[in-house]
Length: 446
Image (tube, rainbow, N blue to C red; front, top):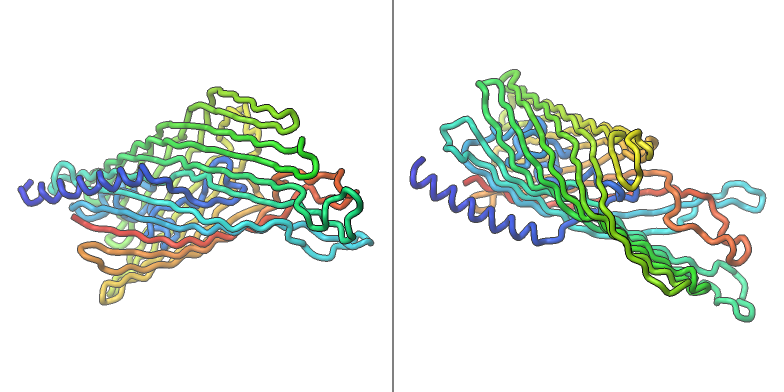
C-alpha cells in the first residue's frame, strides 16, 4: 500500500472515530406508534439514500450499513473507503377515536378522544474500506445504527363533561379531572463489524457481528384532581445488551442483475430491570430490581437488483424481509410458546434510482410491512429523495410518509364512577398513526 493511500486511510479512520464518539454520546431516538413501543420500531432509520429508496439494501451496496442488510454486499462498492453520516427528524401524529352513539344506540360518528404530536431524532453512521489493501478481495465495515427505537409519548386530559352549571362542591364545567401520561424512552443500538469477501467473479460471502446495547424506560402516571388517592407514578427500566450475527451471500446472475440473501440470528439480550412506584393513596414509594432477558426473532432477507441498459444509469431493487416474531421470548411474559400471540411479519421494499446527465440522482421507494402485534394492521410507506455534490462527497436528502391504523385498548381506564355514566366508553379505540420523516446524509469516498 502506498504512503498516499496510508495517509488517506489514517485520515478517514481518525474522522470516523471522532464522529463515532459524537454519535455514541448523542441521544438519538425515533418515533414509533403505540403498537411498536413494546419491542421496537419496524421502520428504523438507516440513511437518507437508503430510506429514500424504501429502506432497501439486501442486494445493493450501502457502504458499512450493509452490515445490517447483507454483509456480503460490502464487496459491491469501490475498493477505496467510504464514510456515511446521517440524521433524521421524525414527526409522529397519533389520533384516537371512539364511536359516538345517539340516544337510540345508533352510530353517529367517530369522535376524537385524544391527539398527540411529537418529534424525535435518529442518526446513522458507517465507515467501510479495504483494511488489507485495495488489491485484496476483502472489504470491512464498521457501523452504528438505532436498531430498535422504543420512543412513544401519550398525553391525555380527562375533563368534566357536564353541560350544566356545577352544583355545590362539584368541579367546574370542563375542569381537568385527571392528567394521564405514558412515555417510553430509549433505543437499542447496534454497533456492527462486518467483513465481505469475493469468492470468485460471481459469488461473494460476508459476515457481521452485532453488539446491541441500550435501555428501555417506561413511565406511566396519573394525576387525579378529584380523588387524590387515585394518583400514581410508575417507572420501569430495562438496561440490556446482547450479541448476534448476520450471514450473507451476494450473487451476480449477469452484469445487470444481482441477488442477495442474508440471515440474521436471534438477538438475545440480558440485563437488569428496575421499577419505582409511587402511590398517592398511601403516600409511599416502593423500589424493586431483578434480572431479565429479551430474545428477538430470526430475520431472513432476499433481494434482487436490476440495472437496465440505460444512459444515464437507472437502478431498480426489490427485496423481502421475513421476521419470525412468534419466536420472541420475554422474561416479563414467560413462555416460549408465544404467550402474547405475536405475528410473524413480511416486509416488502421497492427502490428506484435514476441519475441524470449532470450526476443528480432522483430516488423513490415504497414499503409495506405487517405489524407483529396486530394481524389486522399493516403499514405503507412512500419515500423520495435526491442528492447533490458537496465538497468531495454527496449530500443526500429524503422524505418519508407512512400510515398505520389499528384497534388498541385504552392506555388508561376511564372511570365509571365519575358523573354518572359520562365516561362510559368502548373498551378499545381506533388509532391512526401518521409518520413524516425528513432525513439528511453525507457520503464521502476516501
